Amino acid sequence: METRAGFLSDPSHRIRFVYTPKHCSWLNQIEIWFSILVRRLLRRASFSSLDDLRERLAGFIAFFNKCMAKPFRWTYQGKVLAA
Image: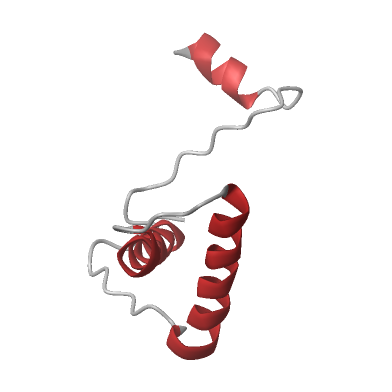
């Protein structure tokens, strides 16, 4: 475990691992947004090319930001995290 911790904490490595709790607010919000993206755009969709996919994604993001964007309601009621 010490060698693994030393390896992962070495600042000269390109990749940095950060462990976050599963109930982290940003992680839940990202999962919710991707769920909306899948349900509203990607499920049962077909795209003729990669450019078509990019165009439809950009259009969906613009539509979402204009019409559907709102703060996600934070509902975690668990223990207070230690500082």
